[in-house]
Length: 485
Ligand SMILES: Cc1ncc(COP(=O)(O)O)c(C=O)c1O
Image (cartoon, rainbow, N blue to C red; front, side, top):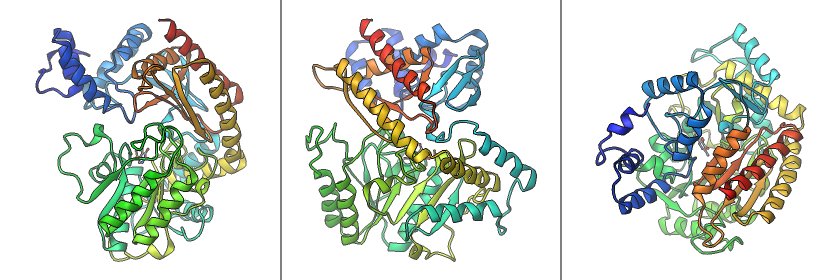
């Protein structure tokens, strides 16, 4: 499995491999530190798969059969960050749990943000199975009942004037559609988006995104993509130190005015790291967009449909975007499905192609989507997300009082973050975050680490209370254990 790594050239290999090569060759410390800094810039979207803590965890926790499969995975798949080489092999998922090949059940607080209704929800699975038996695909130029019903339902859930939509087979493609529509509607092409943001992995989406992991070495990106600092009050360039002064919102207004011809501001309503701007942030930006003739495109792909306690996250901010993009959980955790919902009067390109994706109106995905919305309504998951989220945030705040390494806890609904710091310097504690992750995995909890040091907790919205409590206990036990090491 590690043959490639050991033989990699220390000058030409990607930085992660170079670091391992240099470490194994015993090169000087200074070069390692430089590369460590470079690697830190890559830690935005999730923990890196080249971590020595991951390797140590695998050596301790993975049996031979699994190891052989991981080696096969590493042999056939192109290696890339956050993916191959993989951590472990799964064989089952159900509710809040995934199960590995050895039968270990792990609470999944990561779930790629697709599991609002949990994994394998029977209503979703039954709807998909039934649809597979009836109409498994819908050739272009035809439409189908599940697609029409899902469009009707989503536009009825969204406030006016978000009454038109297109489906796409994934969030990245949906972002591309939103961008093209905004360009065609305004006759402009410039955008303002945020550093550290993620809008998908394609070239247009990484041009909007602000993460080194995706942008570095990718060559020329889209022109006219201005970036501004995100509303992250814990790491604010204006030093607002935890109490947002809205300078970041005023700066968006400033750039809109300076450029004068911006097509759209594109941003995640809340960043799923997570951080949450104050309510006034979006009100200021909304108003500035209107004043400068720019559209507001909100990306709610990972947290739509209840994660933050409402169908659409912008509802928590009393603003309505011109275009909102949703995805992930829309496919019920089973199918890739995303949607672009737009203002009715943006229906301006009937003779051009905005999407044209092969699986645009896939009836099985749409049936799963409809069933997902039904489950969210029938199980009262919007309110549950708020209630369980508030309860969890309260428990995490109690943990913060006991552990000085917890610099900040925050949440909106069941999107929660625990930021680990070095108490003396206040710096991001990347090392501890990784140790806590691998300790938690051994105890049966998986979550994502964002920006290197934020434990990002996103459980299913219907997670049983006892499982939520168990997860927080695991974080508590892991913090205690890692601090003793
Ligand atoms: C905010 C945001 N936008 C866009 C995407 C891309 O979605 P997809 O992976 O379905 O293409 C993601 C995926 O993680 C996301 O979190």
